[in-house]
Length: 107
Length: 119
Image 1 (cartoon, rainbow over the protein chains, first blue to last red):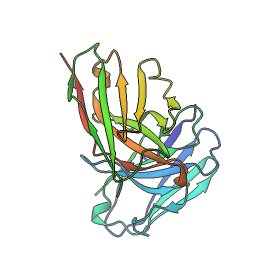
Image 2 (cartoon, chains in turn brown, cyan):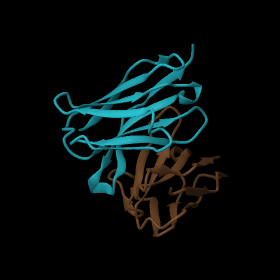
Image 3 (tube, chains in turn orange, purple):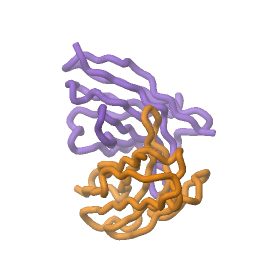
Image 4 (cartoon, rainbow over the protein chains, first blue to last red):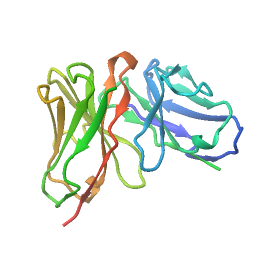
């Protein structure tokens, strides 16, 4: 079973800050790593797929990198609407699709 | 554009069966994988399982003994059945599409439906 570990679990930041969230897989998953933004009362929103590909319509301040076991989501300049919880997720499978524990970004 | 909408009871009694349906509109269900995901209050996201349009399934091993996902391509719907529910199954349940073109990422989601397990 592939475990996904995100860090930090929460962080405080200000508008305009550069924010980095990391995600580590317990075994290699190539680039089968996706990032989501979750706001209360809303469905998760896909930001990044295949580790570094920006989903259509997502602002370019979001970027992803990494391969194998270590991955990063970066927000280059935090905007007010970016305060949310972020989840990584592996789509390599074996035997289940798994999410990280989440990173809450607040003011 | 393609939209997903969950439907089903918001309250289920302990030991009974939770049943939800996801209706896909604006596109065909006859491609990609279709998943159910849940989020208990105050907790993270948990994948329940997916079904391929041809009927093949894959379930979370921790729920496998209680879960059945089925598909009705004629109605553009897929469904979730979770048996013998307990309070631990209380959650917001989402249906979502795993896009084969996007490395099986969940690119489309329903709005979610809250299901409480209580007598």
